Image 1 (cartoon, one colour):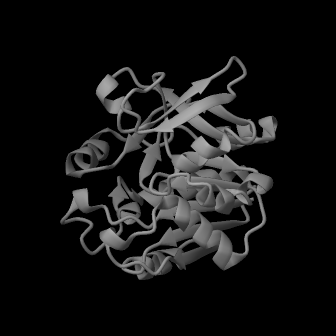
Image 2: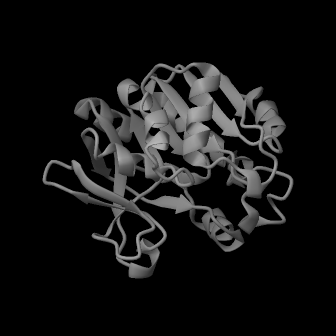
Image 3: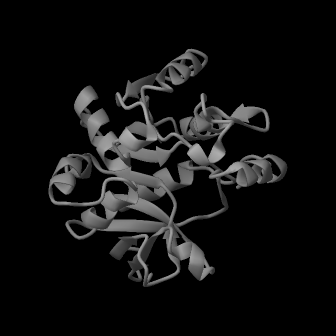
Length: 245
């Protein structure tokens, strides 16, 4: 299994911290955001390669960081240099698949979140389902739903409908940017793009995929800390205690 880490954004809302430095390599406590994610995932002993998708501006930072890690880490430069010319998450995923000729099950995650629970629980859930999977959490605040991927599910956790940033969200189940693609479904990313699925938000591919084949949504067993601006970065520095669940 491969782990693909989406890290090609420019994090403009975190300037000046990220004006010349990638958000996933910012420290939270004594470790970078990426270290928290990878060190946890690696305890599952199932990932044989970590693939970090970066933009051209920040690729060298990730390459230097990768040299400090014991895991096999490949950095893919998507050749964009500005926020205005970015490919978008779904096109970045396809770019990495094409560049590395990937043909495997894939854990696909955003590189700018930290969690208080182990992602190995999500991997185990997906392996049990033997289908592509996402996570979901209950968001009680209506205004926040407008900025999220939202799912409708049945009693087996299967996704019936997923929308991205809908003005009329159907439920309160939000989707954080953590996904598992089966090998077969990873091959469909290109078809999803050609069929007109959104390409900016990574969940847009799942919104298309769940209408083609079964996709399941595991309820998130803990808290996700989304580092989107300076205030949220300050808050996570004060609140985050590591993986406790």
